Length: 102
Image (cartoon, rainbow, N blue to C red):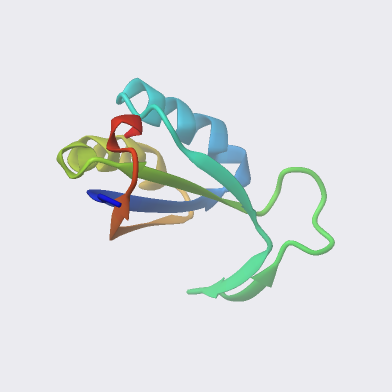
């Protein structure tokens, strides 16, 4: 089966910022992403967990698979939101089937 080069972008951000981030991505022309809850982790401030938190507090992961030539546009849009909040952006190489969907 033929695969096509893509970029996988993972953005971890505070849950209340999810709407602002996904709106910025859509405005930049990103047509697909997946949002997942983040249950816990560890960072500069040490270990943390979502357990016992009320409401939308905590973090989410927004995952995008895109064509490599669209990466800079996505990163610029994401960074306008992540720059002022807790969050991190990771980029890895990926391969996808059905490239027309990206």
